[in-house]
Image 1 (cartoon, rainbow, N blue to C red):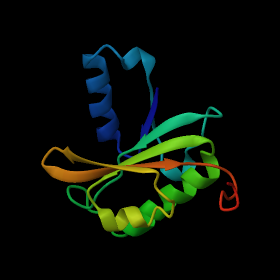
Image 2: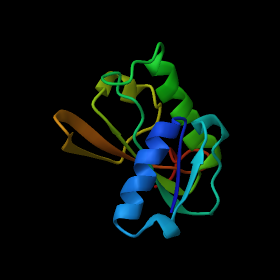
Image 3: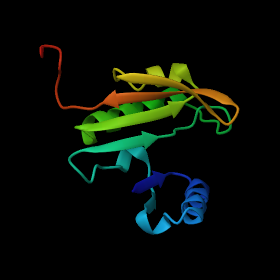
Image 4: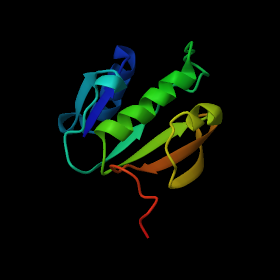
Length: 127
């Protein structure tokens, strides 16, 4: 299991939680921006919990979600990605077609847990 975040505080909280459940030794945590993240395997499942614009205010949230979509498209092909967010407008800026959407709560915030099948090229003419 590999985890990354741009926030040292978020990584510290994650480390504490993993340790609490005896999973810390099975995880690698690293401070890293999504723009520098790379796949370490041919296939995988990637779970992202980007800022929603609620607790963590960002000047250009739409751009952040666009960068997430670009990173997934270019560096995580043949993976399945899941993104949780309460910001449905920002999710549109990922720029990928979702394969599944699940309504859930993250604390008190109603969210969508959205799945994306990542692949190289286009599937328009497949059939």
